Image (cartoon, rainbow, N blue to C red; front, side):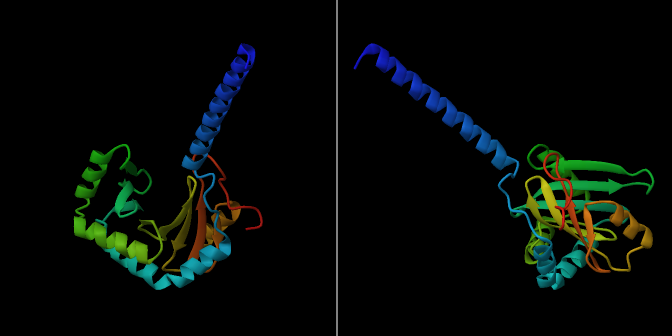
Length: 204
């Protein structure tokens, strides 16, 4: 085999390795942002809610009792551990927000958990009740909001009302593309992340 041919083969192999590494990197990034995650249909959300309605009502009651007066807290689990907390407190017109993620601010997250008076047993029971409801996150309030499933950076959620939806809120939902009124009790929500779709798909 001539030297020139060996060089060409070597260059070709090198280029193939570089291309393979680049493609692998692109696929890794795409996977991290959930490009290959499942999208859920309206019927899947409705069926999921109907199937787990009793467990959803149970976890809403349990979680409401966990939250100190005057605070609104959203908590999301990754497996059996808390992954994210958002705390809202203060005056209704000018509240303050505190954010904490396990991946980047674990000490702050632990401090928030402690300030809410949650024990390990309380958190474990909450995670188990959320799991029984087939959900991964919950936020107290009216409506209570339960995260059903993530798709990429987006979240499909159930907004669960304990009393009739106000006409002003119905109008607000109708003007946007992130909520679908399913019944007087249930409004479906899709919240997009930093990238990707920000609305329910057309014809949803």
